[in-house]
Amino acid sequence: MFADDYMFVLPDSTVVTKEEFVKDLESRDLVWESVSGRDMRVRVYGNTAIVTGQFFGKGRYKGTAVDEHQLFTSVWIRRNGQWQAVSEHASNLPQARK
Image 1 (tube, helix red, strand yellow):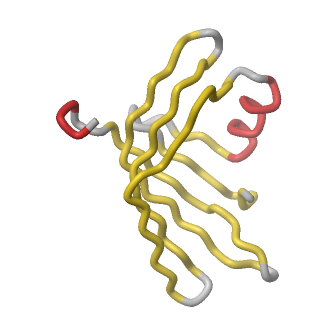
Image 2 (tube, rainbow, N blue to C red):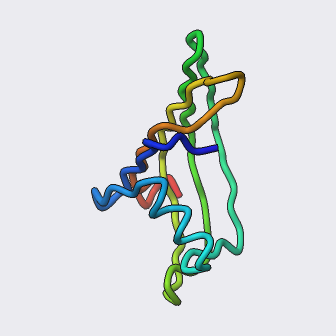
Image 3 (cartoon, rainbow, N blue to C red):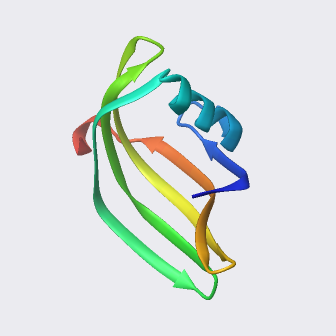
C-alpha cells in the first residue's frame, strides 16, 4: 500500500521512509494493540486522494508503551489501478480534544 518514495512526518518532525516503516513492523519493534480512526474525510481529485482525520493507537515501540492521539493528513495516488500512500503527516492532538 506504500509507494516506494513514501514518507511519513511524525509529530516530533522525524521523517520515516517506507523502508523504515516496514522494517519496524516486520521486526515487531512497532506493535499496535489497538488502533482507531475518527472524523475521517476523503477528498478525491482524479488520481489523487487526500484523507484527513484523527488517529488513536496504543501499543509498544521497541518495548516502550505508546499512546497516540493525533490529527493526520494522508496523500494517496492511484497507479496502475491501485491506491498507494505517498505522504503522511501527523500532529499530536491538544489535551482537550483527546
